[in-house]
Amino acid sequence: MTLRGVPEPREPSRARQLAMEADTDPVGPLWRAAQLFRFFSYLYALGFQIAVNDDLLHDDTTWALFGVLSAWTLASGIAYYAGFGRNRYWVGADVAVACGLMLTTSYVADTSWAMNNQTWPTTLWAVNAVISVALLAGPIWGMLSGLLVGGTSAFVKGAFDLNFGRNATIIIIVAAGVAVGLAAVIARRAHAVLVQAAAIAAATEERERLSREVHDGVLQVLALIARRGREIGGPTTELARLAGEQERALRQLVSDAGQIAAAHRRADRAAADLGAILRGFAAEQVSVSAPASPVVIDAVVAEEIRAALHNILDNVNHHAGVSAQAFVLLEDLGDRVVVSVRDDGVGIPAGRLDEARRQGRMGISTSIVGRVEALGGTAMLDSGPGAGTEWELTIPVDREG
Image (cartoon, rainbow, N blue to C red; front, side, top):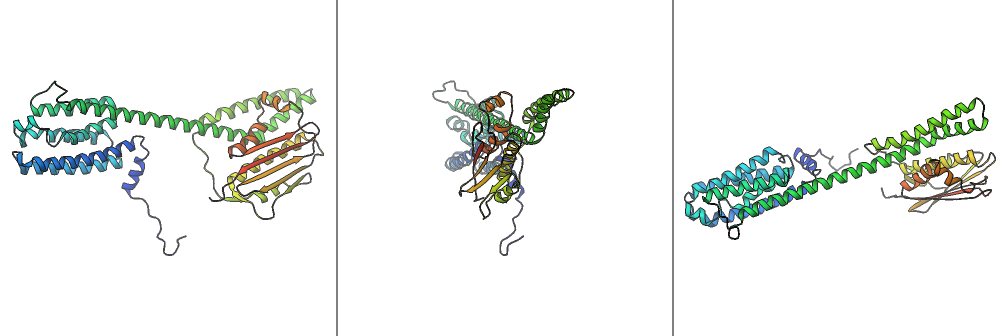
């Protein structure tokens, strides 16, 4: 649907797409900062050219060469900033252009000028090529490119001065290459660590989600078959043993599945009326009370609450006693919702939860508490022998989305 007077969104241009892709480069911020340095070094080279032009032998040729320098500065700056130039071909050309322009000093100036001045078109501008190499290939190649650019400067002057206290040009150029290269390596390593951490977090979340989903169905059935089979005895003992083995195998599969989960679920972020969802649980032995007005929250959050409540009521049905009644209450507190579930059953015997944890049962810890905590909420359990069981689930909700 298009609103009157509002233009339809246009597809981003190819240049914009390249820029967006470049933002995923862990060294991207350093590349963009380097182009700012390139711009200021260009201004410095321009000022130097204006200042020394009258002292050069071929001033017209020098300005033509400076035009080449200007064109390359613009082209390489755009290529590196946008990202499509961050490869060995552009960087190799950058070094070649820098060294080539430095070598023209022997043509545009006499020997005396070359010995007493920095090489044309300034060493500062030539350092851009060293920075590009370091960002792309790291400190070793940054150092080697620094030696190449510094060596070109020494070649143009016709002498190599070992008195670095008086002439530290090569040292500065090499140090710049090493420092920038180390910064690029650190940025890439830090990015790799963050990506690995995100992958582990996603795998853990997927494993817990899968554990909850499987527990809600298959694992409960297998556990029931194993328990009842052992109680009945006789020929069903073998069936109980097989069900127990399959339950343990499936639990292990659920645990391992999270290790290979590579992406989060993408869910529809529609809204849902939590009150209407909970009223669907109303039955002869389940009483549901909810506000008369709709309790509208995120559909994904509502689904997780529904699944947790389903598991609670399932536990009531299996463990609270055949005549146990369950009472569900939903409260809308604005920034959070509270779901209380109380039954008048036999309650949970002392030590039963600790025993379940030791046996690796994931019902309460994962299917109920895990769901609620994954939503940023809390799940409180109050129970005792003969006193029934009461759950209180408090979940924060965001109604601005």
